[in-house]
Each structure stands twice: as structure tokens, then as C-alpha cells.
Image (tube, rainbow, N blue to C red; front, side):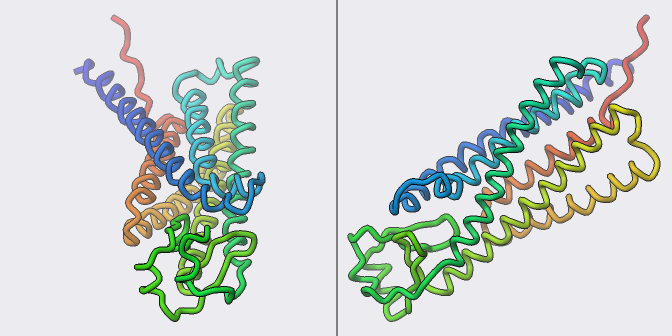
Length: 275
């Protein structure tokens, strides 16, 4: 009977590592998507702000992945008495760097939303005249299409707007849809920042023996509410037909729930007594 316990722990760890691998694959997919979009956003010139706007998702996902691994090391790989001195400085240093990039990508989400609010009516030429002129069509958030004769026929007679500082045009309805999705990204990123702030506080309080009583209850309730918001976001993207966003959101939610279990020791089984 005792032999079943290590097996269950092994399955638990394999599940976590499978999720981490899938998250790494998703990070690569997001990089490819951001790279495609960046070619259009950089048409008006390269700048740090444009870089952060273009690769906000890639920077965000990669930084979160490293943060997740840091929490894995601190909550599952190393006992609390080993997270001291040089080891603690290294872990905390890596996390500080990751938080810099997480906040940079958070700024990128906000900047992307603000970029979509800086528009003006485009009256210089018709959509058909823009074909082959270097202009790009904004179909949806982070989705840019070349201006073709088919697109010209579909949008014939529809007033156009242009994003300031770029060669990107679209219609007001497409722009409003892109703005809404950009706002959803901002809300979602804000929720994750709150989750990680509470998790950092949990780890600190646990190391000092103060994660108990009403503090523990407040932490659990707060994260339960935030996880429900994140789950709602995943369902929203699934309904919208954005499978990659839905799948990625689900994986991140599962990964941090598992990290939470490690923080509270729920998933850790007692070692069998030695014979």
C-alpha cells in the first residue's frame, strides 16, 4: 500500500512539467504571431515603444514562464531552510528582472490600447488606391492583412480611419472590436499582476510562519476571486474562437493553481517511515 504514495507524487510532478512544456510551446507560438505583426507596426520606423507594443505578449509570456519556474524551485524543489543566502539572492534577482519585463509588457498592453485610440479619418485615397502602396489593413487586434482587390470590394464605400504614426487603416467597426480586445488584455494582465503579488506575499509569510488565521483566509478568498476572473477570460476567448488564447489561459491557470498547492503543502505527501 505504501508504494502507491510515491507514484501519486510522481504523477503530480509529471503533470506540472507537462503543463510547463506546453506553456513553452505556446510562448513560441506567441513569438511567431508577434513577429508577423511587428513587421507592420515597424513600417513607420523602429523605436523602443513600438518594440514593446509589438512583442508585448512574447515578453509577457516568457517572463511569466521564468517566474513560474522560480516559484517551482522555491516551493517544490528546495526546502524552506535552503532558500537562504546566495540561493535566495539569485532567485529574488531573477524574479526582479522578470517583474521588470512583466511590467514592461503590461505597459505594452496599455500602450497598444492607447495606440488604437489615436486615430483620424483617412481621406487621402480610397482603399483600392492603397493596394501596393505600403499600407496595411487592421482586421482585428494583432491581425494585419495586405490590401488586396478582394478586400477593396468587401469594404467599398466604407469610411476609413488610420492609426496615427503608422500606415495602418481600417473601418470604425473593426477598430472598435480591436479596442475592446485590447482592453480585455489590459484587464487580464492586471488580474495576473494581483495574483502574483498575493503569491509573493504568501511565500514570504509562509517562510516567516505568519501565513495562518485570517491572513490565510484572506489570501485564499482573494485568489479564488481572481482565478474566477481568469477562468472567465479563458471561457471568453474560447467563445470568441481564439483557441490559442483559451488554451494558454487554461494552462497558466492550471500551472498557478498547482504552484498554490505547493505553497500550502497540499500536494506534498509525508515520506513513508523508514523500515
